[in-house]
Length: 167
Image (cartoon, rainbow, N blue to C red):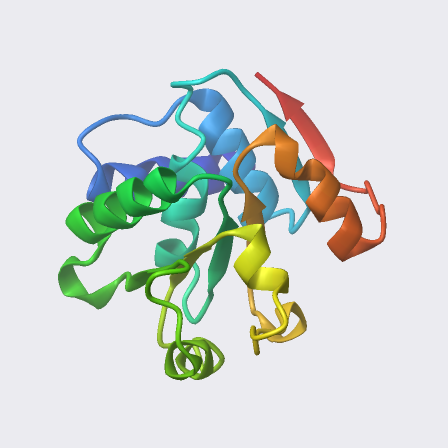
């Protein structure tokens, strides 16, 4: 059963990207999708961490992932990557919410699930003008950058019950 699930993950990644996923990437996706575990991934630069949140909403129907990013350049880059790889066939509709484009209409549209990937900074997510609530989301939240772990602790009350996959 697990080998079938892992094969499905590999096939899904190959469907959208021109490469094979690493074993550890498949492990992470398996933990999130099939085992339904929280996950803490610590990996070096260029490991391919961004593949994990980018593929999730495309493999789990009616799901959303919020990616909390410390840098604007990362949001632009990851939004463009998803648009080029996953937007064909309507499988993904990412949005990058930042201080130059945030508006109340965008925040209202996020709630019913128009978008599959929401890239946002911690400041905007927790700002007083933000109408977003994390509790209604059908999938998950991804923190990009170890410096954001303090922010995760703030949101989730210090609950560190996730599975750690060091690579």
